[in-house]
Amino acid sequence: MASIESNQLLLAAAQACEDKKAEDIRILALDPAESGLTDYFLICNGTNDRQNIAISDEIELRLKREFGVYPNSVEGRRQAEWILLDYVDFIVHVFSAEKRAFYGLERLRKTATTLSIDDLNAELKARITAARAKAPKKTAPAKKKAPAKKATRKAAVRASGAKKATPKKQAKTKTRAK
Image (cartoon, rainbow, N blue to C red; front, side):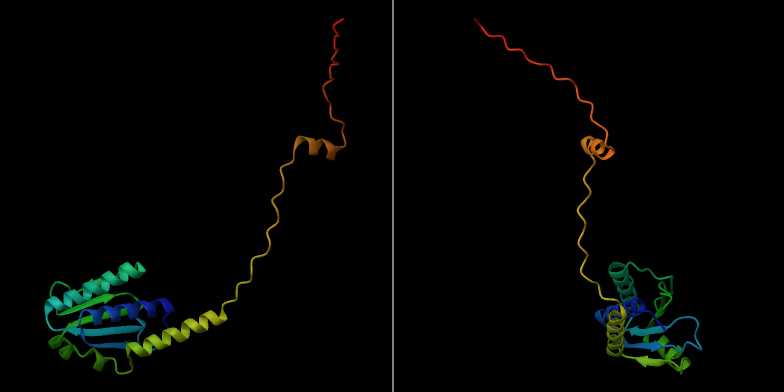
């Protein structure tokens, strides 16, 4: 099962696709029994090669800026017909319309469940509230003890019971004028 952080990354990537006007955005939740490769596929397509590059650049930029995460690998940017961004927990596929129809990843992964962005967002909110409910509540901080005063020489002598050696006072003699 994907972590809360990977779901947040996936949602940010899907939002980046929407912001760059990607078409037919789909999130496939892969069956863990069949795919040890990743948890999700994010699949979309652009109308031309330049838009595909812009979509992939926006995904990379947003995930780097907001989460400090870089893709493990990037493939196909030069040809821009099928750009693949591997973020380990999910893989982003940005296709041209022709290549998407030709390869048909949705057909190849029949056991995968198609999720909408709203479904994933609701699942993420539910997992966050469940995690918050499990977390122990913080109590008010205990009162701090007053810092111990530094022991002075006087206090140390008193504690030891020894008499303090004091310098003899010289008696002042006052001379009176006669």
